[in-house]
Every structure is written in C-alpha cells, then in structure tokens.
Image (cartoon, rainbow, N blue to C red; front, side):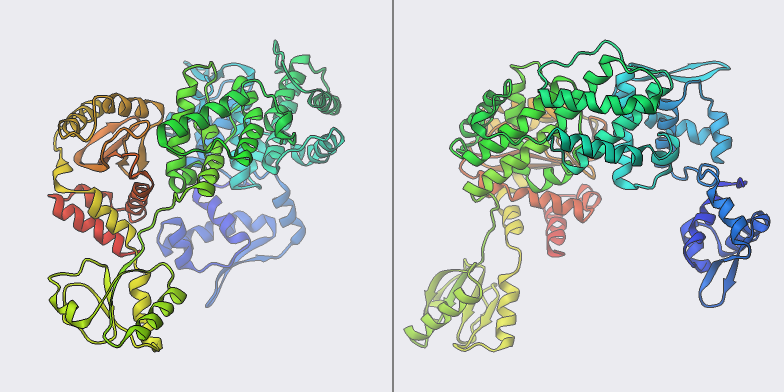
Length: 636
C-alpha cells in the first residue's frame, strides 16, 4: 500500500498504536480538524482492502478497528519503507545521506521526490546540509546532466561516514528503518552481536557499550560493502597489540561466510585499528608506555600549572586516568578515527574552566606534533582535568550571604542565635555583631541582609526578625534570604560596568572588533600587547560562540592584570564563523581572580536558558542592559 501524500503516511503511523482526538491530530499535523476528518476518510478507503479502519469513539478519539487480522498483519509485514517516508528536513537529510553512501548508481532528485511525496525544490534545499555533512569526510557529489548525482571519495571515508551516521541514529532511535532496512542487511546487527561479544570475551578485550555498538555497526557496514564488491585496499596497521590482531582475524573469519567473498588483509588491518582505538586499557600506570602518551600528560599538566596556576602534577589518580585514555586516543588521531562525544555541549557549559585550560594546553602541544586532536577528544580529556580540579581546588565559586547580626539581649542570646544559624544554614557568614544603638548610627549596611532580635529602621537592606527560639515562620523568612542566589548578581555588579560597554550599530568584522576592544583595555592598563594576538589565536582554535547569538571571546591563558568583561551589543550582527553574534562578552581574566571569575560563565548560561539574547541586544544603554540581565537572574 502506498500513500498519495506524506500527511496520510504520518496519520497512519500516529493512529496505529494510540487513540487520538481530532484536536490533537490537527495540532500534530498542523491542519484543521476538517482536514483531519477528510484524511481519515481517505485513509479508510485505502485500508478497505486490508481488513482495518479507523473509527471515531465519542469522548476518546480515533482508534484502530481490525476486521480481518490476517490481512492487516500481511500489510504490516510489507517492507516498512513503503509505509514510512522521511517527514522532516532532518529525516530527509539522513535518508539522502544513506542513499548516496549505499547506492551503486546515480540518483535523481525527481525520483526521490516522487517516492517521498515532496517537491524537488524541497530536496534541493536539503542537499546543502547533505553536501556539508559529506565534506567533513572529503566526499563529494558530482552531478551529470540526464544521469543524476553520484558520490565520489575513498571507500574508507564512505564507511566511516555511514557508520558515524548510523551510530547517531542508533542513539536517537534504535528502531529507525535506516538501521534495519535501508543502510544495513536485514537482521545483520542482531546476527553480529553475539559473535562480537564472544570474540571480545575470548581475547580479553574490554569495550564500553557504546564502543561495542559502534564496532558492530562498522562490521555490518563492512559486510554490506564487501558483499556488494567495494573492498578496502592498501592499508597496513602498525603498532597493534597481539590480542587485537588475533581478535580482528577471528572476526574476519566469522564475516567471510556472511559476505560470500574473500576478504583482503587491508580489511583486517582497518578492523584492528577500530578495536585498538576503542578498547578500555587495564594496564597499571607503571606499565603504560603509549608512544607519546607520557610526554603529552606531562606537557598538559605543566602547561596548566605555568599558565593558570593550578598544580595537578602530583595527582597519581589523574595521571593514571589521563595515560589510560591518551593511549587509545593517540591510536585514534594517528588513523583519523573520530568518535562522537555526545556530552561535548554539556562539558563546555558545566566545566568551562577545565575546558578552556585543557583546550589551551592541547592546542599548544599540537604545535609540536603532527597529530590533530579533535574537539571531541579534547572534551574527553576535559572530564579528567575537571575532576582533578574539583579534587584539589574550589573551582565552583559561590558568593555566600553576608549577615549583620543586631542583638541587644546579652551575650548568651547572641551565641544561641549563632549556633542556630550554623546548624540550619552553615553557608551564612556573620560579618558583624552590633547593638541596636550602633545599628541606628550606621549610615548604610554593607552586608546582604540583617538578622535582628527587635524591629529596626529601614536602611535599604532586608531585615529578618529572629527570636532566640525562632518560629517556623521566622525560619521560613530567613531561608528566603539565605537561599537567594547572590553569586550571579554579585558577578554582574563586580565585573560589568558602563565604561566597558558599547553598542556597535554598523558593519564590522570580528578581527576589527577584537583590535578595538583590546586597544582600549591596553590603554587602560588592564592588559598588555600580548592580549590581542592571544584572543585571535584562541578564536582560531575553536569558535567561542556559546550559542543563541552570544559569543565569549577570550585569551589563551590568564593575561589580564585585572578581571573585567567588555560588553558589546551589535544589533546588525557580526559574522562569527558560520554563525552571527549579536551580544559579545570579551573576557579579560586575571590569575588572582580566576576561580571567582569562573562564576561569570553561569551568567552567560542563564542568558541562553532564558533566551534573553534579543532583549539584551535591543538594550539602549548599560542601565537597560543591566536591568534585562537582573531580570533574567531574578527568574531562577
């Protein structure tokens, strides 16, 4: 059965296992309820010969009614490629990639448009992303008039691209038709799983679950490509352990009858590299001698100590973890095997300091080595460095509430209240203890709020009246003040000011912006002449675009004499690599305030979470910018 349009195919899938009312169907399909009724009627006409229909139950919605289970089962057993078509742009990109990577012949967009019930123009729009994806693997699509489009590139690149795509899909939807029907031979993943697990166990090779899945996907891709006459050639693996060689040879022997073809030594060598690049090393630190691993660990830890002031060189656990990881990492970078890091975005947000120091160290080391270490690999190293920093340093800076305690009822009462505060809220710091008369003589209160045993006159700071044996209401009022977030507002007050704020409502490129801002900071004596080139160098390594139109340029290392943030609003936008930045925060951070200044990153993450870029960008001056920023913080 084939559907005359994409919406009917989607409606069929929605109603197979779920009872849905007209309103919900209309919302999901972005149509009117009248169109839903029309589509259900058309769907029932198609299903008339297959022993099923969709009927409307009052108060519940449309549900599947099966009149002939045998005919309906036969319908479902048909190839689901005729029942399911890519509906969204993302799905179409995945399907297009799979077709190009597996097709032996040229493809025509007109044929695919007819098959997927979309226009040729729609597919042409999707092709831009397809070409960008393929370019990462040095693969190109060539178009010949009347013949169509065909993919060209190395066989190893095609397999890697297809395996990476399938791995991503497997993480998102293990039942995707691309995994079970389109890209791989039917049932191949299920067939290979026990064979691989038995082999890895026999040769005592440990893989994480995600690494085993990737290896299984690669083997399934290899089975199809070899069977269809696309073998690998001219590849030799060097410096591979004997157990890895034996395991790869055993797997190849198992694959040979499945493919029905002879398998070249190059296939076995490439499989060895995939296993070596993903195995979990269990060697003791003293036994590890992984090529440049020891020198890389020394270089990273020395760099962090000399440029950022964090001494992690004497942490044996960190050294062991880094050495174990780097041994397999060097195998990957040597053979340009890229493993995805699904946590990379979270790592950047939750370990901003560890990410920057690790990226700076690895980039510096990269100048003296032929290896190119990807951002995904840096992310894995960041986790180890981040844990090491948390073990030895207070990297999660928080500003705890400062309290003024006003008490006129004797020393014992003061001690009782202090003991209660330490027991209930140990984060409170009692800055001063004064009498009621001394309080009245104060011109202003410097602390965050006041705890008093009596009512006080207002001095623009919150006052919590507290008895020696506080009531539940008094403790609740105290808790509201204690648990209030003071770290981010404090950061905003301390490191942002009107003198380091500007609005640029004209076209300007990124380098010119950096030059202008760095010159101003240099003239103020905040940075020296090394700051600007370091900002450019950091930007060249990996874009400092945080997302949502917000960019955070900064230097490699702590080159500022004083910490400040230069805020730039660009209503017209500034080209930032492949993206556009509208709100730019140039960070100049000093060594003396580094741990404290790390909380600045929480401000920027808050702006993203609150989707505040547009409001920030449209601010007319520093006061309105600050008001928007404080409003974002008050929502937390």
